[in-house]
Length: 463
Ligand code: 4AD
Ligand code: MG
Image 1 (cartoon, rainbow, N blue to C red):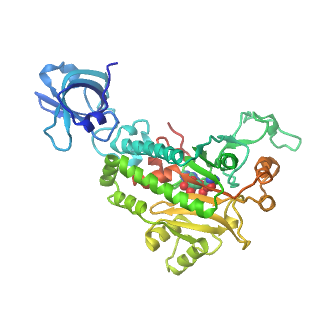
Image 2: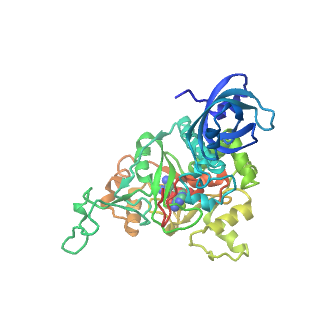
Image 3: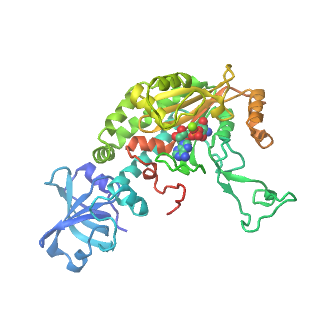
């Protein structure tokens, strides 16, 4: 292959007067019988490169096949662009057609498509401006996450995808098995005999890397995980996926205040990183989907988050006079309508809620002395609601064991988790950031299915 210049590099450098080779997909072709203008995109940036083709210099039959979606190699001279909005264009001297895209059947013609339609062609939607922008921002955020933790002395810990424990104790797991579903082995009681399964026990896809993350933090002091997590919750909402990516830092010698400080600093860093490195893509999304996007990103990056307890939040919600779809009172879990009321209508800023009722939170959270609440913290964002969930962890062996028994968490299979509270236990804390929730916020997209390349949701595992 001839050496390819990325279109982003050509446009950014703005230099002209030299030959170059570009490769990509045709977005549009227009012109007349003398000259054709091809807008070529190679995914390196939102902008297309304008290719000017002197029709007489090329085989008419080949040029006819250069239609929207076709893939090309172009050699040519880079020249200053007389048009507005681009530094350079290319005068074609050579053209090779890699692949045609029949205009009768190629679904991505010029006209704007709905996001719903694009979901049905997820194999092609990365070639649209919108998904190009989203996928580049997704990459930039993943990179920034690793950079933030690496720069701050955290170690990337790889936690297992297949596990035998339910980290959140919520029973929302996908089973992993190699047993014959039609004819599974059974024991005397008639129950399926998982001792004959691949791992000799019941296993599932992980809902969170936290428990293993804690093991890492209790040795390396500061770790983070960043991997796929799976939840078999039947939530068909714009904010839930059955397969999503989660970032879970876990820190020894941290209390809940330290945990909140880290969460706030981390989120602001990521938003500033996007503003600094994804300007063109954010500008496009701001214009196309959400006119307040960039303003909102600045607002969150530049203002202190509000911190208050769950109990205080319930008082505000009760005093609001709003009639919520789900009536709220102390002891109930907040729905996204409540979270968004606090953030969008009451405080106009991100909010961190702490000290939730223990009965609506997971077994591992540190118990407060009041006997009713735990040291949980959730970060609530405009448009999203909960973006982060975390807590200080219960480091006291007896208290943890008692709570596990109360909540029917099988202690025998969690012996390794309990042992960390026997041997050199320390105060520690952590949180989980939903990667796609972060991307919803940063891109301004409205549906979580549109910030992951191939979404998995109830009744849908296409592509
Ligand atoms: O609040 P969650 O369930 O917390 C945990 O899993 C803890 N183990 C985290 C920790 O303390 N290490 O999930 C954490 C975050 C949520 O705040 C949300 O952003 C995201 O994960 N999340 C989802 N994102 C997309 N689809 C779903 N079904 C999600 N469930 C949770
Ligand atoms: Mg949560």
